[in-house]
Length: 97
Image (cartoon, rainbow, N blue to C red; front, side):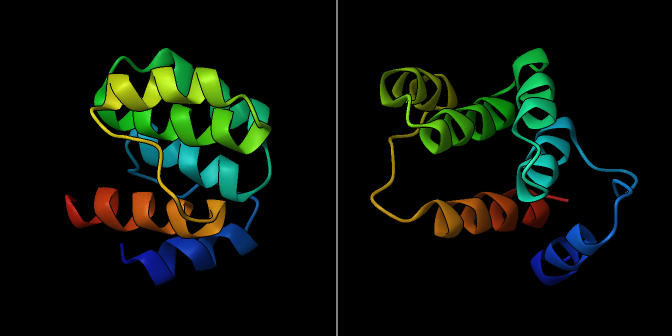
């Protein structure tokens, strides 16, 4: 799936199949369903989910918590808009297949 296809899937109410938990969480974030996104990201111990988790806490304005999750993901908080970060996360995770 490409980033454009992933973004287009947000027009549907059904989660696309065969997405990693991190991409599932990111999709829910794109649907403005913070709680569903957070639940998925929180339950996955991997670095990709930690990255999405950090993005979610940045979105809610809890930067201290976001920074904790960025560290868990091996990343630092970006100096970009949330939209740009969401797309960057999606592009990288989708590129891995």
